[in-house]
Each structure stands twice: as structure tokens, then as C-alpha cells.
Length: 303
Image 1 (cartoon, rainbow, N blue to C red):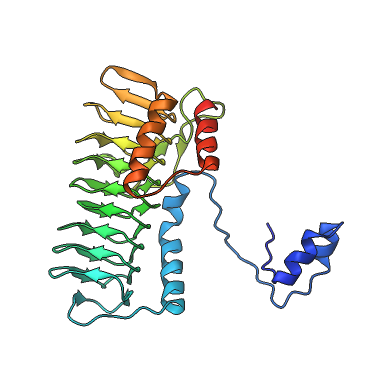
Image 2 (cartoon, helix red, strand yellow; image 1 turned 180 degrees about the vertical axis):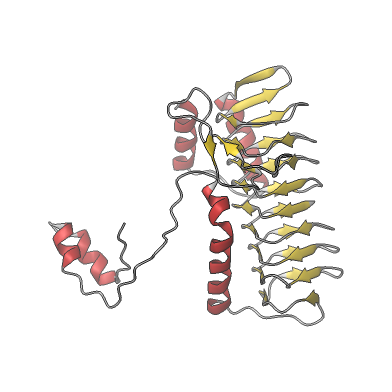
């Protein structure tokens, strides 16, 4: 794999080149760097595998590039960096643990009273860490999220809600997901063994159980997934886009996209009903889906 960072002039030249490979070969490169161990994502759980390295790299870059300070009067301990954007709000009673890594709080983020954050950790723009939340290390919260309960080693893509108690560990949460009160993941087998997972639903071409190489792996939760109160999600589960879960039995394995799962069984989620709920959820954040977004949802549902 070869990549090049181009100047605007070089990009324009390549755009109009008749022979792109020849034009690439003629580039004058000021620096050539070989990456000994490139980070390639081939399976959903590889996000978990590469999480710590990626978060450390991102936080290091943020510290160098952005003008964020360290407000006085906060309850902190540890020697790693704390960076808080001027528009962020950290309310009384918050504890920031910098023993094992830095913490970055982005613009217009809010950390509510009683929350405990352990670095390395990132809280994105306009996101809220709710009262008495416990945010453990290697957690990255994207923009416009609401997060409560106990969370560790989890990535929230953005516009996701986990606004109540419950444990979420070593997981990846897609945009617009909503986890009902008490939703809890398992991220460790009782045997302490390697977790086996499946990237595609059973019966799909290429679907098979695969070794993840991970001892700790919670759930891969797709965009627009919804869980009812007290939903239990088993180790290494993969929940594809648009699925809804309201079951008393634990959710496990790989669940196909747009699945409507209740104690009565699993059925396809009607696209008209899904779009109705999706637009209502997005509307609460004053976001309207674009026509391109709607076409993509329709194609995924049909596919």
C-alpha cells in the first residue's frame, strides 16, 4: 500500500493527468516514510485491537495542534496532560484521573457533577458526560453524545445515547444508537479465553466464526441500533445497522441489519417504520437526513 500527501497543485495535476501512474511516478516527494507495521482494519473488532494506539496518537496530535488550556480549581491527580477547551464546562464534583494518560475535553462539552474520568480519554464537541458517570481509560466519546453509567475502552462515533446506568466495555457504538436504561455488555468470557466472533450474520456468504485475538471484547453496535431497558449483550456480539432489541433473553452473536427482535422472535424491521423512528430521533437533535443519506438507508435495507 502506497499513500502520498499532495499539495493542492499536485492534486489538480493528477486530476487532469491522462496517465495517473506516470504522473505519480514523476512527483517530487520531500519526504518518504516507510511504516513498518501499518494499521489495517479488516474486521469490526480490529477497531478494538488498534484502539489504544489510535487514541494515544490522536490525543498527542490534539495537544500539539489545538489551543486548549488547563482550568484552575479542578479535582485532578496524576502527571499526564489535561486539556479543556474554553467553551467546555466541567461542573463541581468531577474527578479527573491523569495517572495513566491524558484527558481532552472538546468545545462545548459538559461534564456533570460526580463524574469520574480516567485517561487516556476524549470527550467530543457538544457531548455530555452525565452525573456520577464512570468513564474508564481508552474511551473516546464523539460529538453530540450523552453518556452515563460505567463505560470503559469504548468508542462512540457520535450522536449516540447511553444516558442511564449500565456497563459498556471494550465496545464500539455507531452513530444515532440509543441504549436503554440498564443495557449492559459482557466483555470477558468466564473462561478468560479468546473471544470468537462473527462479522456477518449466519447464512450470509462468507460468514464464519473467527478468532478475534482479544480477551476483552464487548459489542460492535451499528448505527441507529436501539436497545430496550435492561438489555444484556453477550461477549463479542455484532449488531448491524438499524436493529431493535426488546428481549428478556440476552442478545448474542451476529444480528442482521434492520432486525426487529422481541420475545416473539426476530423479524425484518419495516423500512417505513424504521425511517419514521430515525427521523424522530434525528429531529430531536435538529438534524435532518439528506436525500443521499435516505437513499443509502433504503439501499442497505433492500440489500
